[in-house]
Structure formats: structure tokens, C-alpha cells
Length: 258
Length: 354
Ligand SMILES: Nc1ncnc2c1ncn2[C@@H]1O[C@H](COP(=O)(O)OP(=O)(O)OP(=O)(O)O)[C@@H](O)[C@H]1O
Ligand SMILES: [Mg+2]
Image (cartoon, each protein chain N blue to C red):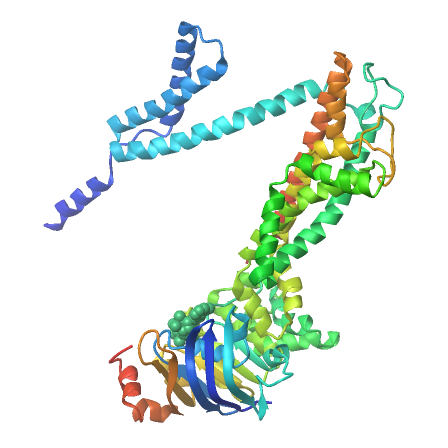
């Protein structure tokens, strides 16, 4: 199920603007990798290159390699739609489909790419909602619109929607930044459970969160404003937070800049 | 002890002298009365002049009274409000009087007989007859024009918003803008020269529909474009990130989210072309008998009927009455379309309730 991601020499552009440069790292399967770094250093951009969402942005362009278990996502003949089915994504702001009910939101990925059996659908929806710790709250109102949930519930709905298509990797871009501490905790617990099944990459501005949920942490930074962002180091989370090998990492974590 | 006077002073700066709730009405009534007095005294016989004087008095009076009682800032605020009201009334009065006039004159001959009979056996100067043939013509011509213009218009808008980049999209946008400005008579002449003079087809409802669809298309493109742009990008990204292909994303996420607005736009475009006279005059030609077939021989249509009843009446009151009644039917039709558009927009709007 879960797969390893191997990135080498990745550079991404917005038109002529180089947003990130020469990033190489390995993301281990069945683990949580956290991306930290100051605002604008390219964490979201890098995350979006991992499932070929970057090229959706007008002018978005990528150089380098992203290997998913030895297959280059940017190789010839690779279908970006298939890549996104394999590598799911949860966004910073909860974005359930406003025209769909809770049930339809979770079923959307399966229904709209036509890969499901009718009889299995409600099982999958139930399993996904349970997986996202939302089932008990919504089981009596599956036909109500998804946008009628609270922010934290909506975010968990989006997670349920993402895991319903059984991806192998789950990318999360600041999934808790719009949520209260309780919903945040619920989602952190959820991440802990999900990593049994998925490879998880999470962007966060919250150091404690990175320390709590992740196995490995990558620190990004940019040399100066207008310069492309770079990967400074990636290591086991414990090491990054106790004894990082680069001074800038320690400065950032201890709040001396950024 | 020391906090009491502070809080007292603070409360008093927040509160100020204010006019009672009914004061705008009182000022309005007062200024209308004064304006009537001035009008009578000066012997102005145009009610429009009375109205203008009343409007000016209302704005000035509001300012003067509010400035005395409430102070200058509140007075400015009230003047802005009263200006908005005056503009609203100036906009509504002609509309209301137009509808009133049409209803008053139109109901004379407006009945079931009128709606279900043609002018086949009635001369234009005689009483009797009806608009059945014109209703059939209008419905068919507008329906065909809509069938042509809506798919092309909506697809063009989807191209422009979802796919369009670079030169081609710019060119399409430019031509849509140009088309928006085409006078209806020019659209009619274009189809006349192309369809009737070059291809040698006869006058027919369909020829009129072609011209109407030219007029309708840019309106549909523009309104659909605006509605599609309102769909948040996040929804598209959410869908794409689920591994849903782009065309299905557009079909199943973007269009359903904006369908209410798109339908409203289409309905308004339909309402607009329903009243077009010039191209129909050139291409459909008009007839006094029932012709159900829009593809051959002249048809009638409501705006054309109104025009012909008026033009051929030779001073006959019966023809005038019929023209007004047909106008009433036309306005009613457009209003029903507008109401339907609102209903659909509300019914299809993204649901937010809990
Ligand atoms: N759509 C875009 N078009 C052009 N430039 C962009 C776009 N999105 C991001 N950028 C630029 O790319 C760089 C990296 O942005 P990115 O959003 O990846 O930062 P980030 O690390 O996620 O920041 P944050 O922590 O604030 O979310 C920034 O300089 C930004 O201005
Ligand atoms: Mg970001």
C-alpha cells in the first residue's frame, strides 16, 4: 500500500519565478514526514509537485525527478490524473463540494473517476468516515450538505474524502491551521492512525505539532527574499528538535528568526 | 470612585441627539407638500417638475434638519441615504407607470379568446382577432434561438474560463465583446444577406432564430463566464487532487456549483431577445394566419404583431387595443421568465444549511 517517495534535484517555477531549487529527499513509507520553514520558502509548492498539482497553476513548471517506488512521476507517458489518484491531498482550508451531501462528498472521488462497484459504495463511505473519526458525528445526517458542518468537521470530511479513494500517499498542507485546539488534536490523533496505512507528508507552522506527529522533519529556508527556497536538512524529528546539524534549523526552531 | 465619572463621560460621547425613526417620512411628506404648493403657485403644469422640486427639497431638507439636530457627519450620512432613495424612485417611477399604462390599456381585449385566436379572418382595422399565431411564432423562434445560442455560449465560456490561455482566448474574448455591441438590425441584415439572399432560403421563423441567436450568444457567454469565475479555485483543486479528470471536474463540480447563476443568465438573455423586433421584421416577415412550422413560410411574433397592429391600424381603436394587449402578453411572458430564473437560482444555489 504505502509507497516510498524519492525526490532528486527538484526545481519548480511559477512562470519565470523560481520558487524552489534543487531539492532532494526521501520520504519513508508508513511514516509521517513534517515540512517546516518560514512563510514563502516553498513548502506548499514542493508539496504540490509531489502529486503533480503544481502544474495546475498557470505557468507552473517542474524540473527534476520524483520517484514513487522507482517510477518517475514526471516521466514520459505518466498520467497526472493517475498520479493524483495514488497521492491524495488535503488542503489548508476545508473545501467540501458545496453542491454535494456529506455522503456524496466522500463518494465523489470514486464516483467521478468511475472506479467503484455500486454495492461497495456505502461501505467505503462508512469506512472512510470512520477512518477520519467523523462517522459518529454525521451518521444521522449523511444526506445533509457538507458545508453545514463545523470547520473541524469539514476538514475531517475532506480527509475522509481523500482516503476514500485509497491513495498510497497523503499530502497535507497545514491541515489544522484553520482549526481550534480540539479539532487539531482530533486530526493529529487521526494522522497517527493513518500512518499505519499511508505515507503521510504534512506541512505545518506549529513546531509542537511537527514534534508530536512526525517521524522525520524537513526544514526549508530561503537565503533571502526573492531567492528560491531550499531544503536545509531532513532528519529524524527527535534529532531535528534536539540536536540539528545546521545552525539555521536550531535558530528557526528556537524562535530566533522566521 | 474614580472610575465612575470616566465611564459616564465615555457613555455620553457614544450617545448623541438623533432624529426619530419617522423623520425621513415626515421630511418626504413635507417636501412633497411644499413642492405641490410651489407648483400650484408658479403655475407649473408638468408633474415631472413637481417631482423634481420635491426631490431637491427632500435632499436639502434632510441635510438642513439633520445638521441642526444631529451634527454635520450624521447629516452627510442621511443625505447619502436620501439620495439613494431619490435615485431609486426616479428609476422605479417610469417602470411602474409603464407597467400601469400597459395593464390599463391592455386588459380591454385581453382574454382567452384573444390568446387563442389569430388574425386570419379579421382585417387589421376591425375588432376581434387575437395573438395566438404571434405567441406560437415567438415561442418557436425564441426556443430555437436558445437551443442554438446556449450550448455554443456555455461551451465558449467554459473554454475561456477553464482552458483559455494566450492569443486564441484573447481573440475569442475580443469577438464576444464586439458581438455584444452588434445592433439587432445589423444581425438581422447579416442573416438576411447570408441566409435569404445568398443561400436563397425563404423568410421563416428559423431565419429569425438565427439572428436572435447571434444577439443572444454574447450575453450567454458573458454571464456564464462571470458565474464560472465565481466558483472558487479550491473546489477545482480539491476535485483534481482526488484524481478526477479535468473535464469531469468541470462537468460534476464546477457546473453544478454555478448552474443557478448560469440559468439565471440564460433566462435573462431569453427575456432580452423575446422583445427584439428588427431582425424578426426583416427575416420572419410576419403573417396574420397560424403557421406552426418555423422552417418554412413567414410566421408572426409578439413584438412584430405589436408593431404591425400599430402601423396598419389606420387610426382604428380596435388595432390599438390589440397592440396594447399584445404588449401586455409580452411583458407578462418576460416577467414569468424572470421569476422562473429567480426560482431556479434559489433552488439550485449551493446548500449551506445545517
Ligand atoms: N500561484 C503562484 N504564482 C506565483 N508565485 C507563487 C504562487 N504561489 C506561490 N508563489 C511563490 O512561490 C514561493 C513559495 O510559495 P509557497 O506557497 O510554496 O510558500 P509556503 O512555504 O507554503 O508559505 P506558507 O508557509 O506561507 O504557506 C513564494 O515566493 C510565493 O510568492
Ligand atoms: Mg503554504
